[in-house]
Image (cartoon, rainbow, N blue to C red):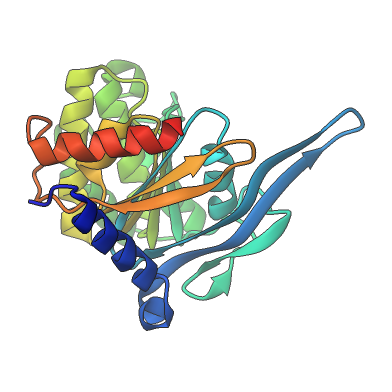
Length: 273
């Protein structure tokens, strides 16, 4: 497990720089290339993002952290194709993002489940929209319910589920259409600490089993260090990348590990600067 001496920090910075070079180009799943976002009205002009640049490799788990107002959710929405950047470009597998697509599965803090549909009905929704026919649709839903451990709740309605179970339904629904990338915007922010820890383990297991690329937005630095391969630390006014930190600690990660605490302290310091 790595500590964060001056020497190792310098080596890590060098590694991060190397990842963005030509040698890593073929491995890039997501490229955020000089993205800016400006909101203008008759009364004001707000620069939400300025020249944001980083990449995410195939199968990598990357977290975005930063202070309030640093544009984390705005950046998430541009990668998802829900908003267009004012400048720069986002590319997935080399192709520019021009709108939402089934190559990106999304999970939000608000569960967004259809209350009139069962767990099975919610998970199958995207497959219905894609025109997937039976029995392939049912087979895929069964697979996803097994993945998130909700086989016994297939016929339950959202009102009958705990917060953690609702979020697992959301993850299953996002993965059902077999996206290339899982985008998560503070998905565990509305559950209690014990449930959050359980969901961390579930998400890491799912990530390991599926090999999906994950981009995860959070305000919780400990959550970012626990989950991610790398942490993109953002600064505010306007939103921009301050530093990309590689987390070189073996999984599963424990908060009591001194190396874990050193990464948390380092990232909190970067956010506070």
